[in-house]
Image (tube, rainbow, N blue to C red; front, side):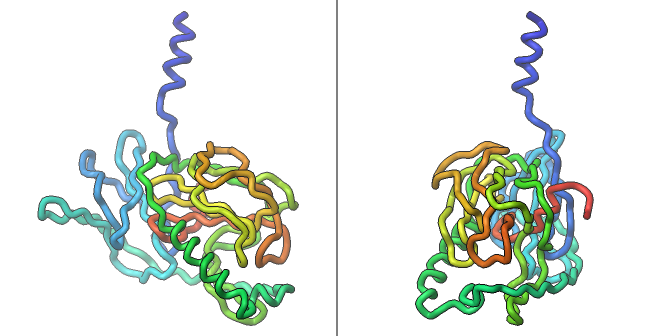
Length: 268
């Protein structure tokens, strides 16, 4: 009887979380310890920041945009006429350049008839990227797919000799049809077949932490669905602007795309 009660007690204990690795560069994460009782209301560049508890201590996780300049930055909280600030220093980082040859020329230089669709999809993606909910969040992520990481976050992309925006996620190569898993619990806030991204899914993990999965061959969830950590959300594919089957996985934090590798321990 005592053993059964012990098992029930353990099942209700909070699960320990592992923090993502701090990286004070554009595209990185600032990990800031807050004072107990003073953890609510902090913002970075006018966006609320994610706050989690580690060993009973409040910790703010702040996404640093790729466009962020080096130098001193801060999160701040305004309360009853008082302003509290927590400062951190951001260093410059030079990302490499990647040249990619795309066979489908239309995915590099779309037709005029494609532009209405592309612009409409861009608005949907922007809305999903800055989505914010107060849902509780578990930042101890699992890798959504085992495979070869073929694309480095932050690389400047050159498609068929034409410069494009930096790579905003992690590419993981795998065979078409391999299941893609939710890295943490979340809610499906956007999905569909997009011109550049192919079949994609956006998950809201809570407090401005967003995952985006692109180029899927199949989507296994529905809009508005709650998914659990490790649940299949789709399958690897080669839809959209690609050179072969792979998963493009982006993580957004307070509206900024950040390096997904930071959620998996030591630098690689």
